[in-house]
Image (tube, rainbow, N blue to C red; front, side, top):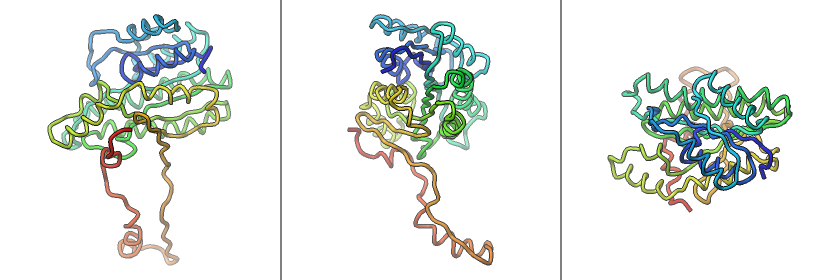
Length: 301
């Protein structure tokens, strides 16, 4: 399905990224396995998981090269794309999977932790995508796939930095899907449900948190890979600007923000009439803030 294509997968040393890299290689792609080799919070982990993924791909007869550049910097993002061009002579797909977590309730969130998560989880996808864009434009084809999160699409506690970044990724993908469509380029998102090192950092201090983590443990990272490979393939060239969820054997298509209720006042609105008429009429269509786990409340199928 991906024969003769060159695919970059960031954060591909472990978890979802590793499974996507393995599946892409099994589908015939040459893979740039990018991973900085850090802990889930972004600290130096002192190892090279990218090399492990490359060894697994090569052992199965595939083609891959390891890259340890940091997605959070423009110069190193260019080197990631340059690695694909230098090694394989082309680039056909970018999977922006690299990410970190530094969770804290909003009133306790350190600005440095906000910046760190934005750097990796939002600036990283922009930098790598932007570095690939001229190559995609020149060849008249290409596929972007970005990992977002239901924490961003729905909500979660203690993740203001992560939510801001991952919802920003959806906006970035939307912009790319509009700007690059004329060049035969598509851009989509997946919100993956899977047990990974990052997810394992979720606190388990309360019964609700313990139940959530117990449910997440049942979801394998390799279930994300088939959807990713499909979206990177030529068979998905008409799918653009979409957001999918993958949860074990379930695939979701998420809706987009559209008006759900309109109110009009020919004389113009005053604050009093906004409160008395507009907000009161719209109230039944105002969903309260909820956490992702309240929406996806059943066990994964």
